Length: 316
Image (tube, rainbow, N blue to C red; front, side):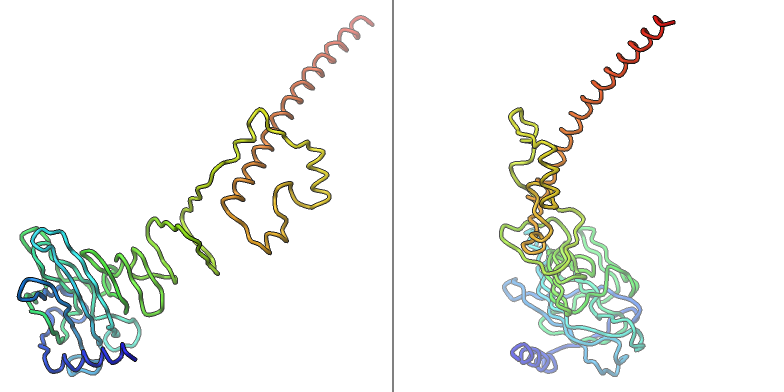
C-alpha cells in the first residue's frame, strides 16, 4: 500500500511539474537520450521518465514509469554508479505478443555526470527532476564514447520490469544486481532465469539450504585432509575377505553410508567425495597387489613349461 501511495504521488507530481518530448527515431528502435540531473551544488538526484498506458501518441506501445539515480564519470572521480527502478511495459505495434519495455538501456557518460537513457523511439515521454540535454539519436563525447540508435530486437536492450544496480552500464544482459517482477534475482545478470541466478564466482561462509535442483558449470569443495593417507606405509588396508563379508551382511561398502541413511540424512558432498577417493585408492592398491601376484604366477607357469619341455625331451 505504501509503495502504491508513493507511485501515485510521483504520478501526480509528474502531471503538474513534468515536461514532455518525443524521442527521435521510430518505435522499432531504441534511441539514446541524454539527461542531466544535478543539484545546484553539483550533486546528483533521482529523475523520472513516464508514459501513460493510453496515449494519443501510439497508444499501448509502451507505458509506465522509470526512476533513475545515476552518477556519471564525475570529472575523473571514477564514481560511476547506477540505480534503475523500471516499471515500464508495452507490446509490439499493439499486437499483444512480445513485451517490450520503453526502457532499453542506461549508461553513464564517461565525460561528465550526464546519464544516457535508451528509450523506445518515436514516442512521447514525460520527465521530471532532470534537464533534457540531447535527443538526436546518437551520442559522442570527448572521451571517445560513441552511442547510436539500435534495433528494438537487439539482445543488449529491453530491460524487464524490475530494480537494477550497476556501475556504469545497465543493459538487458548484465548488471551488478537485478530483481525482476517474477521474483527472480540476478547477480551479474539482468534477466535471471531462476529464483537466484548468479553469473560469476560465488562464496558462502555460512549454511545454505536449497529445496530444489542446483545447477552449476563448476563446483569447488575445499576440505582437509584428503584420502592420500591410504598410500601411507602404516595404512591398514582391509582384507578383501573382510570387505566381501561386510558387503554380504550390510549390502554396502565399509565406511560408506547405506542408501537408507543417505535418503534420511542426505550426503555431505565434500566428505562423500573423499570417501569415494579413499575407496578408489584402496582399489588401486588391491589392483597393484593383484598385478604382482599375476606376474609371479606367470613366471611360475613359464618355469613349469620349461620343466615339462625338458622332461619331454628326456623321455624321447
